Image 1 (cartoon, rainbow, N blue to C red):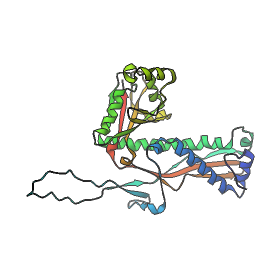
Image 2: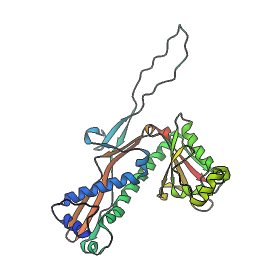
Image 3: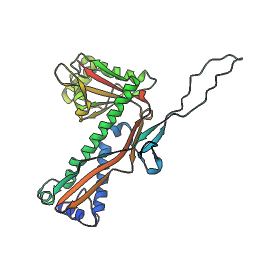
Image 4: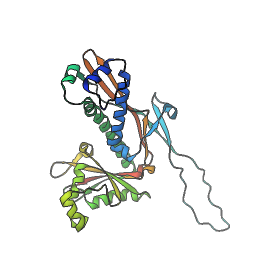
Length: 311
């Protein structure tokens, strides 16, 4: 029997987990998780994931860790004006590279008694989604922002900005973030911010939005996914955007806004095979665990920036 995990009732789910089709149930759940991760992870919206296999990877010389060797753009020096009796300077071309380690993200091992599953009115697929998918994707995005923070610090694209509006988002703050990237001969294309920061659009004035847009925002909120030539990616994971040490006069944590150049100037998001999902039955208890092997790397530190919004 082929099991459709999206439509399976609880009794069928428990029966399949207990029987010879356990592997098929786990495989179907794995496809379910992978689909949700692609839809929800903001890191995957900024850098399109690339699926790799063992053949694409190498073993690190220092330990038993798989790594991916990525190439950066070949550096070409500036052109020079010369007269007819001169010759251009010689330059030997090399290809810069950097390595991306593959690491694991795993959920907790969740467990539920069979009798409690039978008594629950919540669909099994919803239970799996709530307890596993969101844990994996939030950890994935958290690691991504750690990489971005490190890259922005290395390039000097990490600043604080006094908005004069209690740490609210302003056009001046957006301009400051864009300039960090644009001044490095790149173009800022995407801004990543929390929903709490995005809500500052409703406090913007006539000078910020103009009369027509101000009326619309006042009634319906800001409904667009771009502003000032930037694509807006809005996340509900506000905890990932709160500065660890800086606070506002109100006592709230200062929030951070991230800027990115076009994707080809960023780096890699690697997925080894596919997200996996394991199910097992231990007597009267059903246990499940989700995990994935991924790698992240930013090959151009100038292509990212972070602005912390202060009073």
